[in-house]
Image (cartoon, rainbow, N blue to C red; front, side, top):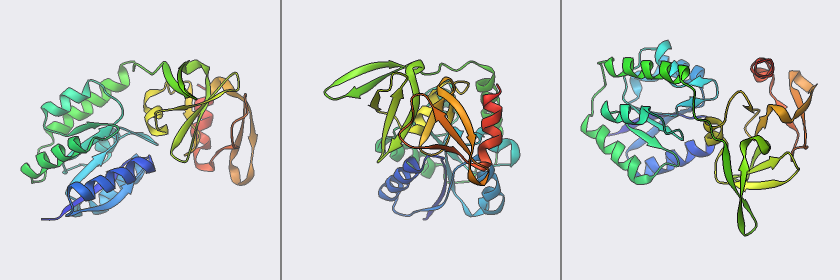
Length: 258
């Protein structure tokens, strides 16, 4: 029996990795779509939900929490959540029989979740579990999150402790993430930008684009750029120009005005 899935994940590397593992674990699976945000997911589900068997969702997406999807459309599909954030929802989702896998995704965890889905091979028409989900989402918004305060960074043949406050920007290239510090040093750290986006304090750090996360205190100046974009001038300067797309300019301005 075929297994038709959709992946709701805003980190391309993670989405590709998940798709590859699914093909190995469940060769009958077909990834119908990879969706990177709440808005895109809602639009796709409104049209295609009846063609899908299972959803994989990250918790935090480029334009909000995946829980927001449930407030905009009536979901009748089982969901396996995949996230870097280990919060109280972990135990709650397990109690409700919904898969909850922590990143980086372990193949055995994914295999177990798929096996559970196969045992429950029918659409979830009872939305009681999703009402619990929404209540937990509200609790997450109300409760202060334990944001990451420090990192162990690689420097040649040793590890160097860095506080989050020391880091001016994070940059990804060739599947490595570099942290640039206020004293103009650079280190490699063992996180993806997507994982960092979930663990850093959003009042201090902003996902500028697919390559950069920037710290507010390190932004010296914001210049107008071509086609409605913005160019950030950082202290210290980043490895490449940091541009804010026209579509994200309102969100960036709101964040800077917090």
